[in-house]
Image (tube, rainbow, N blue to C red; front, top):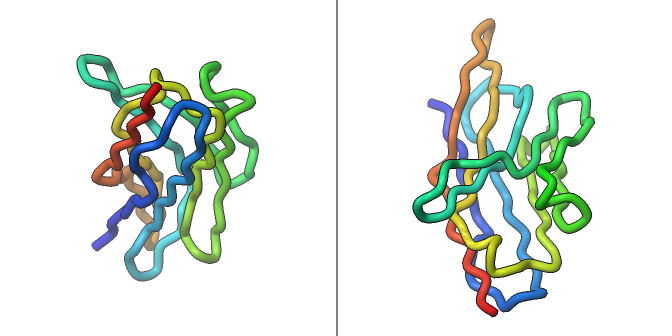
Length: 119
């Protein structure tokens, strides 16, 4: 069974930093593409950043210059470093990954981790 487990969320004051991590578990798996999304109350889930296997990153406009996505393929982990946080960054952050297992590829979501930024 494949699972994505997130960690690192919490509460921080405006201007602070948080580092989110997402680790994939399961036997004989490889992470193809991985991304972070966020969903604030009453809003749709939005892409924050993504990093395919090639390593070429993409960021939402609100994340550019403040957030950095990275991945460690050997550890099956992706991180999202968030700096200069603002109250509007408050949301549940989700890890999303396209994972190959054997000859199949499937899409997985983590359970989400809450990030709260106070002014």
